[in-house]
Structure formats: C-alpha cells, structure tokens
Amino acid sequence: MKALPSLEGPRRCRRHAGTRLVWLTIGCTSFAAACGLDLAGEEFTNQDAGVGSSSSGSGGATGSGTVGDAGRADLDGGGGGNGPPGPNGGPTPSSDAAPGACDFDGTWGSLLTIDVNWMPAGLNLQTFILRPGAGTIRQWIKGARVQQGNQLEDTTVVCGIELPDFQGTQVAGGQTYGVVFPDSLFDGMGLPSFQVNETVTSDGPGATFTASASAALLGLTMANPTTDTWPATITTATDPDHDGTPGVTVNAAVGVVGAGDAGLYSNIPVGVPAPFQPVDVATQLQLAIRQVTGVTGTVADCDHIAGTVSIPEVAGVYAINSHVIGCELVDGGACSDAQASFVDNTQPVFTPSGKTTFTSVRLPAGATCATVRGMLK
Image 1 (cartoon, rainbow, N blue to C red):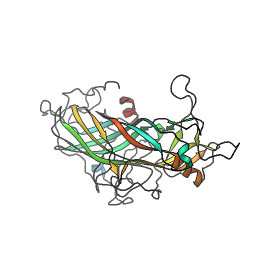
Image 2: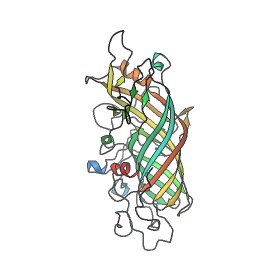
Image 3: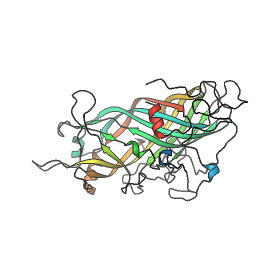
Image 4: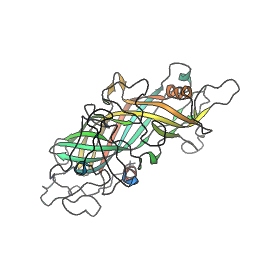
C-alpha cells in the first residue's frame, strides 16, 4: 500500500471547539455502529450529484422527519477549521490549539480490507457450480465527523466495494466469475448514510481509536441491522441506485482475468442447462447487502488513523451477508424468480480468515467518494 499523503502535517491540528452539528438519531448503526439503529431510510446525495443532504426518521425503517440545516453533516467538505482553509485545502488549526492536541472534527475517508474464505451457499446441485476459495474484500467509506470530548460521531456513506474473483468447478467448466460495483453506484446516486460511534483515549498521537459495531445496508432496510438475523428472504428491498429494480445493481466482470494469459471472465450462470443446450447467463445482478464491522486502531497523527477490523457473528453467522434478488440476462431480459434464486443459492458465503486492516485519513475540502478511492489504494 502506498504511503498516505499528509494533508496538514502532524502539528496542523485544531482543538475541538464544540459540537457544530445537531444529530437526529434513533439508535446506533452501520459500518461501525452499536445498538441497531436503522438509518436505511436515510439518504444523502454526494457532491458528485451536486447537492448534499441527510435525513432520518423518527423511528423504524420507514420513519419520517428531516434534519434542518444546522443538523446537516458536511459529507462533501473537509470539515471546518476556525480560520481560512490551509494550503492543502484542509481545515486550519485554531489559534488556541495546544501543541500536539488534535481536533478530529472534519471529513474522513477510510479503507477496510478483510481477508475471507468462502463456500457456495447451496446444499444441492448448485454446490457443484462454485469452487471454495479465498481472497480479500476491500471497502471504502467517507464520514463527516463531530467530536465531543473523547466521543466521536460520523455520518458515513459507502464509497466503494471490491470483491475477489470466484472460480467455477470443473463441472461448471472451471470458469472465472467477477462482480463489479460500478463507481457510479457511489458517485451521486444518493446511497443511504449511517451513523458510526467512536471513542479516542486522548486527543494526541498514540491514542487508541475504537469504533463500535455498525451495519452498512445497501438495497434493504432492517429494524436492528447490527443484531437481527439475516433474513432467508428479502421483504424490505429498496432501490437506492434508482434504476427501477430492487437492490443495488452490479455488473459481471468482463475481459481478461488478471495479468498475462489467465483467460477471460465468464458471465454468471443462472441454471443448469438441459443436455446439449447453452447455459443461460446473467450480465447484471441486483443485490441486498449487510456488513457489520467494528474497528480498533491507533492515532498516528491528527490526520491519520490505522488499525484492524472485526466482523461479529449474528445468530452464528458472520455478518457479511447478501442476497441476489434479481438479475439481467445476457439478452437484456430480466431473470425469472427461479433463475435469481439459483444465483442466490450459488453465491459465496464469506467467513473472515485472518488479516484485516483499517486505514483512515482526513480529507481535503470538497472531497468526494472518488477522492477517497483515489487516496486510499
């Protein structure tokens, strides 16, 4: 991994000047939240779309209510200093900041990496389609952070997801399958935001940073996303990418696999063909996703935090969950329910397998999800 750029330098830090945002919350949720808050109905629009907003309900998955201007988190900016912007576009230290003291207010980008292994979901003929494997999940997030003492609160959005490739069995021809989350899904589509609650043990380098368990939801709502059992069937699907289909739409990878002569990606089979008949395949999938994560790290300086990620079990299953709730065939038609179910029962079930990393950096003013993906490789 490339060394992270210093946006302001270890000493260009501001002491906290008080909470500047009013929070309307009903619990604690996602990509690192603690007590089952459902903010799946809360949406904000990235700067890429031109407008930044955030709203949350008064309770439940479909509650109503709007955060006023005083309560809006600046998810597109770099946070505010007490003076003019610094030379790198970030906030300027306040004039009364103590030497070495950090004000963690502002906008932060993070990359989480999780080594996993997997088995196919099905317990029938579909088990023979996907080969067990191992790889790394990479996930980017961006959060507007407000500090009050040693307590931090982030209003966060997912900025990118990258999954490893999957291999078919010899029965399936040994093909390679890939799933691509398009950048456009995160850049201006209004994905739901979620709250992350954190603590720091002090306001300087060497402090321990802890984010309690939180759940990121894409394509569905859950009443208590950090603690509820993953449903066998999705009945609360949403359409956060606004493409007219439930869930978030991802693409089957195309082109050459990796480097060199590694073959080509194949489209995703949606059933077992009749003898001597071609296999029906899909080029797009509609997914409902939950991932629950917690973080423990160390403050390197006022602009950089690094550590490890933990994935809890919910009802005996690691909380990296997804369902395929629809798909699009290569000819452009929608999959049947039976075909979508086949893919759902063929998909990988992930288990954390060892190494995890968390890398976080303060973002410059005007940062977007593309900024996060560009800065954190």
